[in-house]
Length: 173
Image 1 (cartoon, rainbow, N blue to C red):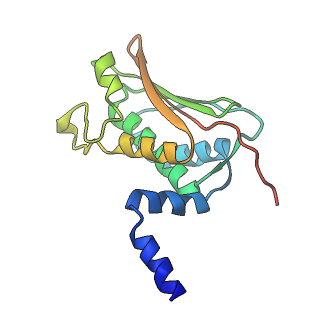
Image 2 (image 1 turned 120 degrees about the vertical axis):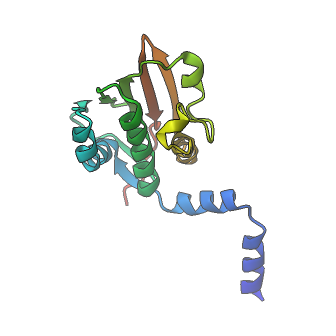
């Protein structure tokens, strides 16, 4: 009877709540520096194919946060995919010790209104580029589930997408 009550309680939970509960159980201490290196390495061929040689600035010390490794990988991958599609041929990636990560690239033709909508579900800069408009909205949802924040700003024709994960007390058992 107890197992039936537990199953019934789970069925009443909304899918988003269930995913949130599940992902909270998957958190582990991750070094953001290493995660960025791994993400860039996985995009190396695609970046090279576009002639993009990223300028990367990482701190010497680890930047550790309690995060869901799969979600973090997806967030970084979605941001890099977006940069790969829309960059004018450059990419600068910077990680600060406080846990703020920025991806900057020249974005000709992008205006501040468009930059403000990049995280809207189904929004695409150009429909002709075979984009669903879900990548950055998924990155936003996953970042928020990991208690982080994400945004974008356009200054002088350069688009900067940033993601930040605040410091936490890390339990090292």
